[in-house]
Image (tube, rainbow, N blue to C red):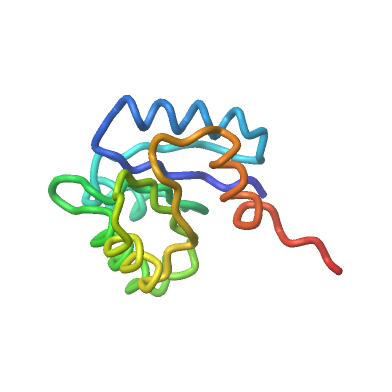
Length: 129
């Protein structure tokens, strides 16, 4: 079954770009939903079954690290893969995200190929050996 994807970024332009990039990957995605920050994301998560979250790290109200921690703390959401999309140059925040259980990260600016490469193992089940 194709998953619903939640794109979380305080920039509407980046959310639209990510939507376009996700469609360009040709990967099986059912719906793409949007949130402007972590709080909005949690509201959507409470109403909709989400199979993948792509989130910015730096956002107002609730940043991506706080969102990731909230998702990993909730048993119903713990296994949902979260990919961080970031402009962070340093390893501190990215390292924290990985320690909290992020499935990976992509640095801005990104290409469709970079997003697809990151999501291949996450969205498509691993092929048997």
